Length: 126
Image (cartoon, rainbow, N blue to C red; front, side, top):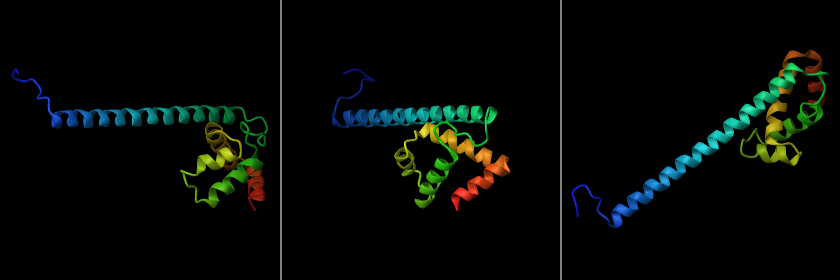
């Protein structure tokens, strides 16, 4: 054995295994974070398009009409806007996570900017 050479024993192998597991976990978390960032960026781009070219203020944003937006909003409110259950509730209505993010941001912007949209939202929510 030479000076500086690692000792091959059970403890050394366990340390290497733990470090490898930690490294894998960090890489997995980074990949999930990158994916979340990508979805957020895509939703932001869709929102910007919807706001820049809204057509009629009552036109659907992607596949989400104002009526569907109200229904899903009620579903989410019923579970206390639980972030874990939200994707499943949205998917049950046939909406992708990306489409919901864009529609939610877009409808919120329209509701805030246009009293007629706000009034219709209130009527549908009652």
